[in-house]
Length: 347
Image (cartoon, rainbow, N blue to C red; front, side, top):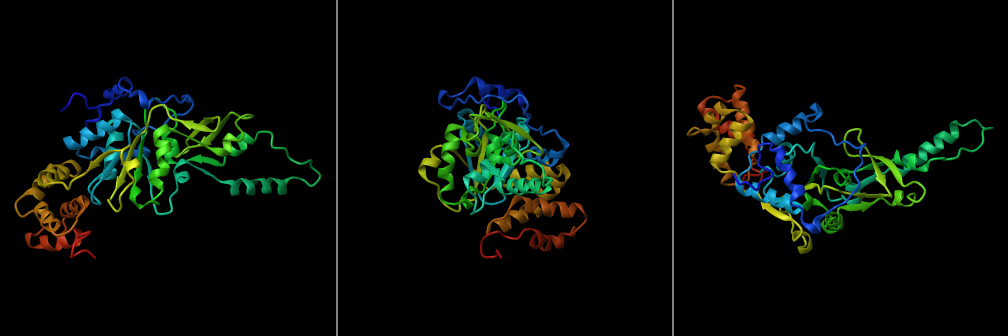
């Protein structure tokens, strides 16, 4: 184990202090911390599934090296690999290992825009509420005056996962930008300014900033709120940004040079054994790893088409439940749970 590692896969919280001690001068951010904003703790029972998912991840030394490289340099980590290899789970592992709270997840589709990740402003609902208040007002009442437009607009503004990740906090949040290769061709380029500068503006609040410099808005956390000063969100601790890609298209060089790139290989027999032991138990791993067992069947089927590791876990779990336990049932169990994701037999 290397002494310079911050993320080690064993919840070494105390090592996070090294980030502040080794900050690149070109990646310094000075957002003013909001003392009233508290990021949720991963120990909260609402996030038990996220914590369990992160704790079950097994990171090898090359992966840990590159995760820590991204941490030290305050750069996004672009994780590539076939579906099911553990790209998204790595983000949960970082959050669990360093106690950085629940992962902020931003799933990307072909219709996703940068603003979707930054914030949402429900102008239509604001107009509907204003009309409703007008209709409920007695006919002889004087016209209502909006004495605090900052408070009013704040109820209709909510930061997205990207926007919440850039709130100024002492400890960074983990942001998972999932399957960025599915997004519009311009999305990686649109992200560059935010990822480089660590800040973004909310135009609806900038217009009010002279009269109302501070506005409370919603966040992507459950029932979370935060204060925005001058219509601008600027980070203090740069978030741990994990972008995943299934390799469906190439990214522009300007985007790639700002990322630390990690390609997750398919797990070999030894790692599959360790994954089963970690997620299900040693006894189950011993049975699956025996000659002629499920790991051997998984590797044989994977040699002709892609499989996801959770398909192996499903098969092991079924046997633990008493299904298809006879030796002659192995083929039927494999066919039921290990459908190839690509290759001649994929459907």
